[in-house]
Image (cartoon, rainbow, N blue to C red; front, side):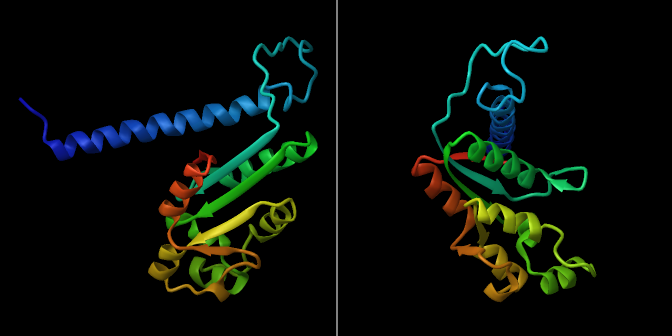
Length: 184
């Protein structure tokens, strides 16, 4: 019995997604156990690094399209914090672009719009972190398609957020330019 071609493509996409997510998680985890990013010198505390990650330059696009949290903290912002802080500490020339879209697009809204959209009263809880990351050189982008779908305009975004023509196309463009894609 042969499987329906549409179903086979769906199963392949799901399998590919799982592999991509696993690889991204593994790559990020490796950053934290490498000598360049270890908090203890190699060989102390029972940990010996066999394969150091000697990163001199990093071009990373963080593709933030769906809710993924570590407690109350968005996983994408955790990734950005870890990378931006360590890259700065270790003198790594880094270019980090965070592309928000889909279900996570709301994270870049200004206080008034965030309150209205999320039925909240205290403003965007991520704005302070985002502003700090922007000071470190991280570029934040919102998907124009997500904005159209939600009836948002440029003035609804946090200061410094750039609007791209479409998140998926932007991620493809950045990958073609040599960026590594991480998707929490």
